Image 1 (cartoon, rainbow, N blue to C red):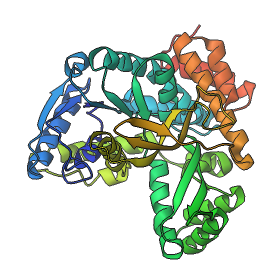
Image 2: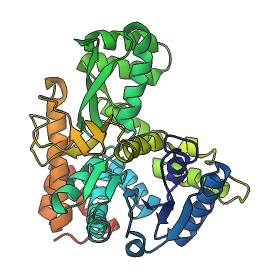
Image 3: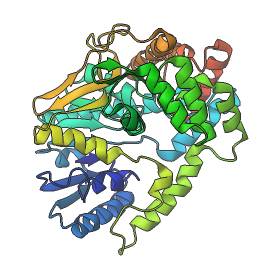
Image 4: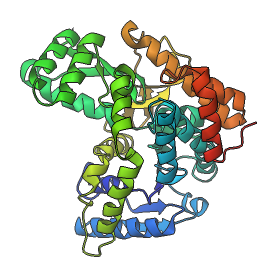
Length: 419
């Protein structure tokens, strides 16, 4: 079952059943749920054609009614976007006027996405518990780590927070290092979109330092972005998640790039999604729209069905995901969500202990975690003072003279009533 199935990522997920890693799963029915009837209808039609072309006799059921769709569901994939791209544009553009990076999963933008989304996701999770108590929620709704922490601490739902970012980084590292080191084992620590592959082992030996030097050498000259990422990896002694690390470790350059851009990322995606839905609505279309490559999201089906296969077919695997800490990371509270490697099998999800966060980025992770937990408190209590604490705590803000007026403007434009 997919909640938020009218989103443009749905074809990527469906491709996992139509020839991807979920091709041999015993799936009899896929239920698509969304509040937008038009977008839902387009994605349901494409889903039916993709499955038919792959000769997968899977029934497709589309509905705008979550409660009627839930009974009997085994897995519930959540990918909701409260407020749509119009809200994301506000989240990205308003902080720029205050000299702060505008991004949908971190900083003020990520915070306001969370403030809108947490109450909705908590209610969805409670409905899952009520109507499909055995179901596992596979959450992609951003900010994924914050949603994971909120749902697991305020409902009894079974949920894991998934993201293709760290798993994609691990796959890339394994490929680059294979020639010299053979099979490598990588471990990560941090938060969703503030994550780091901090440990690389081969043949029982810690080769992290050698791995950084090897990757740096292999990727030299490929692109400016990769060269900068490699430089940062050498400084930190760990591989940070690409893209998102720039907001923290090269924030002036990231801010300048956003200020110079003609459009926010939300505006760019609106144009891309128009192409995606135009392709998806074509009755002759039987594969994911080509424009989806410009949207991102590659790897979602691999992560999703890797987890489902492990649980359904009892084929144990290890996946980086967001779960509650419970002592796995020594430097964060037990009830905080962390993104670490977990072992997944039919018996469930078992987080693997990490120990200490390396000192080179420990402070950043702890600061962002304080911001995230305050954001959850603000979302569920509707208290302006807690929301202000959350915004002030974020490393990209950290200035009361900026945080307070920005908070009030964002509350007003999103019509959020915080007293």
